[in-house]
Image (cartoon, rainbow, N blue to C red; front, side):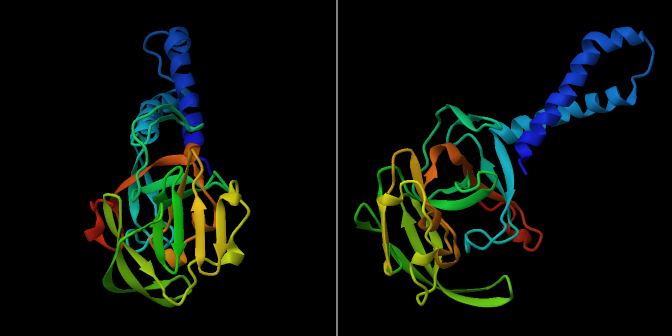
Length: 267
């Protein structure tokens, strides 16, 4: 469901009624006569819809985390806020950038439109920038042939859908200026080669059972989930075009199961 389009259509419809009443219908009714319901309700909702549309389109947009691909950073059920202008000002609905503000940086958590189905919003961590050479082999990450530092941080256990108990290693990874926790399962392959699809610029990547190496094309980004062995990400469906960027995730604003997470900033 394209909520932005629905909100835009509601804005146009209620705004049209407001304009019609302001310039024509009010004069025909005459002074003192009540507004019909089909004028009163759209006029009442128009300013509310306008404020929500402007806030959601240009400032912040709420999202709910549906899966565990970003554990332990984000939990299933977290409600997060996404900064819509960090990576540039875009026209709502068509997502066309009209002004640059800043570029994504390695280590930032980004919301974007899923390349295989732009109607879906995904959230992952930025690993590779345009022209970067990204290598992930035997659970170790290299960027431009420089190994990314990892530090052990104990174990992390969780229950995934289907009531399966998962035991993982928790590691602290430093990408650029960001240090964050990731999860790995040593017994699971770095990439399931059979699950890799054919995607644009697929020739930029080389896969084998140990992992892969990809060169990120211009205007694209390579993203991975923090729960490395339970994440569908750029390893499998390819690079994220700049045009698909929605914004930078920056804060958890609600979680029904854990109130302590409310107000936490996303690292």
